[in-house]
Amino acid sequence: MSLVRIALAGEGGQGVQAIAEIMAEAAYENNQQALYIPNFGLEQRGGVSIAFIQFSDSRIGAPKFQKADIVVALSERAVARTKDYSGPETLFVYDSSFNIAPEDFPKVARKIIGIPAIDTSNEVLHPRVFNIIIMGAVIGMSHVVSFEDAKKALEHKLGYKFVQDPKLRELNYRALEMGKEMAEKALQEGVAQSV
Image 1 (spheres, rainbow, N blue to C red):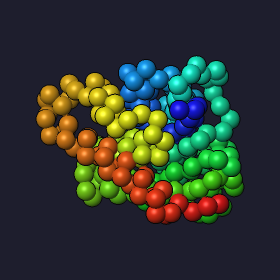
Image 2 (spheres, rainbow, N blue to C red):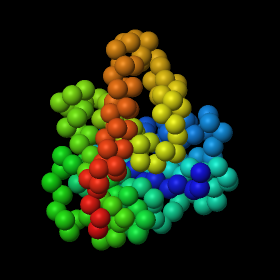
Image 3 (tube, rainbow, N blue to C red):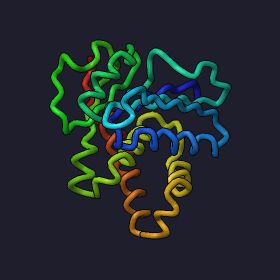
Image 4 (tube, rainbow, N blue to C red):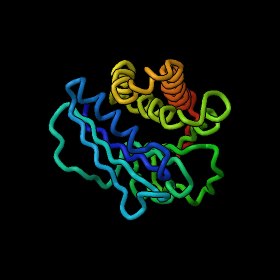
């Protein structure tokens, strides 16, 4: 695997940093290089939070980057905050439940993809697993970690909750799988719109 750079952004409390942490752990457990830098700034509570993650088979040089291979924006404000991280090769992913004006998207991106993560979590699964759907979508688009390694990392991070409520394990695994399938389907079917 060559170097893959991902920027995840969402409102405080959406679980952006948790997704990044779990994915970095999954890569580490698979003997890959992974670097995760959280960015809260002054907006730690109630503002846009960004996680910068890099994955590679070889040593990762710089902790930050200018352009991402994949940008995931989980709110309207996150779209505005992350569009500058897009370049000609970037997949720009947003939650399709938001009504984003065309001019608010990045001017340059390989593809812009809408994923119905919020609607799916609210209507099909549970609002608490919204971020796990996103994690599955990132895995489905990037293949930076295997699905099985992601499940192991999820178990390690949330295992204590799964012991308290075993139904949560299945709910989280289902959310992970649904996110992965959504992303793969969007890429295969050409739902993504070229910019």
